[in-house]
Amino acid sequence: MTVTYRQPGVVLTDRHFTVPLDHDDPAGETITLYAREVVAGDQAHRELPWLVYLQGGPGFGANRFVGKQAWLGRALKEYRVLLLDQRGTGHSTPANRQTLPLRGGPAAQADYLALFRADAIVRDCEAIRAEVTGGAPWTVLGQSFGGFCTVSYLSHAPEGLTAALITGGLPSLDAHADDVYRAAYPRIERKVTAHYARYPQDVERARRIADHLLTHEVTLPNGYRLTVEAFQSLGIILGGGEGSHRLHYLLEHAFVRTPSGPALSDAFQEEVQGLLSYAGHPLYALVHEAIYGQDDRPTDWSAERVRAEFPQFDAAKALSGDDPLLFTGESVHPWTFDCDPALRPLRETADLLAARTDWRPLYDPARLAANDVPVAAAVYHDDMYVDTAHSLRTARAVRGLRTWVTDEFEHDGVRAGGPRVLDRLLALARDEV
Image (cartoon, rainbow, N blue to C red; front, side, top):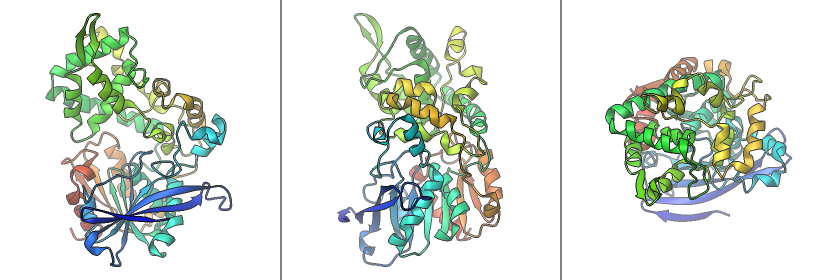
C-alpha cells in the first residue's frame, strides 16, 4: 500500500518493495525494502527522470528531509527522487539486537548479515527499478558508503544507470581493511592535531577526562560503559565540517563538583551517550569492516589490530607523559560490543563476521576500465573517513570518471554544500565544465 502526503513544496509517497534476501536464490526468503519518493509539488504530475539516493554508513536509513533541505531542492528541479532505506536500515526489515535472534544463533545471524553489503544493495536497486521507472535507467547519488555502493553498481549493473554521482565515497578497489586503517590512523592524528591547534585549552580537558576514566568505572544513563577507549572514539565527529567545534563544546562542560568530588556531569554523559550509542544504527558496527571484505581474507578486527601499530593512540602512555590524548576516528573494535548495550548480545555474531573468509568481489576493475556511464565524484582533500589517495587511485581506474577535489568541505559536504555540490557534480557528469 502506498501513502501520499505533503510537506512544504514537496509531495511524498511511501513505497514498499519485496526482494529476495539472497538474490542468488530468487525463489527463497524475501525481505522488505522501504523508500520515500519525493517530487516537487509543482511537478507532481509530470514525467520526470529518476534519481535514487544511497545513504552513507553502512547502517543508516536515508535522510528524513523536511521539504527541500540540503541537496534535495536542487535535485527536485529536474528529478523524482527515491530516498532508499538500504536493506536492514530504517524501515527496510531492520537488523538489530531485537530482530536478529529471529534468525537463530550467532552463526545464523552472521550468515544473514553477510548478505547486507554493497553488492546486495545494488541488486536490490535493480530488483525495484523496473517497478519504479518502468525499466528506464536512473541516476544514482551515493554519499560515503553510498558511493561505495555506486562503484559496485558501475561494476555489476551499469546498464541500470544514466549517470553516477559520488560524494566522499570512492573506495579502494583492492585494499584490505588493514590497508584502510593504516591510512586512516595518520589522518585522524592530523585532525586531532588541528583541533588542538584551534582549541589548545582542550588538550588539558581531554587529558583530565581520560585520567578520570582510567581510574573510575563510568556507566552512562543508557547502560553504556564509558571506557577511555570509548571516549577516544568521540573523534569520529572531527570528520564533519563542524566537528571540531562540537567536540570543543562537549569537552568544556565535562565536570561538575559533587559532595564526593569532581564527577562527569549529567549533561556531558547525556550528550556522549547520544554520540556513542549504536542503538539507532547497529548495522554500522556489525558490518563496518565487512564492507572491505574481499579476496577470501578475514577482516579479523582490523581496526583493533592496526591500532597497535600506532602507539601514540595509547591513552595510558600519553597520560604517563606530557603528550596530548589522541582521539580515534571511524573504527569499530571488539570492546565496542562490550561497552554498548545495543550491541552486547551481538558480540559473538560480530566475531564470526570478523573471521569470515568467503567474501565475494565487490568491484570489477575490468568493467570499470571500460565504463561508459557518465560519472562524477567529489573528493574531499583530507577526508577523515575515506582516504583521498585511495579515492584518486580509483578515479584513475574508472574510465571517464571526472573528479572535483576540494578542501572547501569535509566529508559531509553534500549536506553542508547542498545544492552547489550537486550542481557541480551534475555539470561534471554532463561535461559542462
